[in-house]
Length: 285
Image 1 (cartoon, rainbow, N blue to C red):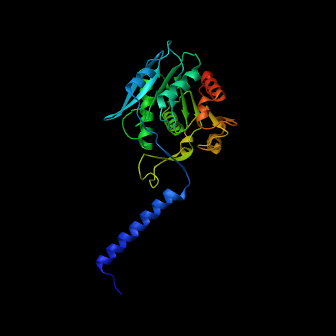
Image 2 (cartoon, rainbow, N blue to C red; image 1 turned 180 degrees about the vertical axis):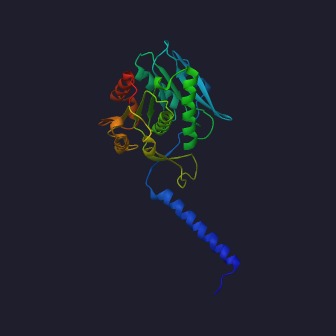
């Protein structure tokens, strides 16, 4: 029996669709990653102004792409030569308010520079989040901070929480590869292998954005502080342990028993650990 040319075309289409469906199914259901939705949202101009009006704080913006402006906050120190912290937040519907509170507790009265920028779509920043866009934006923000504040990379301590850990690892690793090593990196409850989804009625079927940090860690130099809550219900305690194991001797690992995911940002022990790490001020070998 022979197959007509039309039949062959339909057979080719069917085979191609089968391959595509199989690839989709393997990506969507074959790897059991934890899945989360990007918590994008708005921040009123009035609320933003309140955050920016706190002592020594001011608003800052980053024009990362045509028509895409990110909202941020910066605290400039009174004296030159101060340490700086660039913070990469977690998946938080109130990034700027949460970050400002955390950073103020970390500095604990020290005259340090502090900076945080809300991701695309968060706190009224423009654009729509995606892994590649957020990584590119993070690198832009790092470069802009150095240029605008006249800093050396070694003046900057990068601190990150949860989702921000992936972005921070990318920025710090690439900076090191270009001989622009930062002073230190602190990863608090960092993501290790998750999927992020944009808000949609079809989110359950979407492939989403994969954030797999392990390959990025090879380029990250010492010193790195890894802090993990022992009762992390969101990412699991193994996330921090796996990251620390991948970093090996480059990392100092702290696990805090009984501390959950979001509570880690308010943990006195975690905040003291980050403060001490930044205070040491040393760039590792």
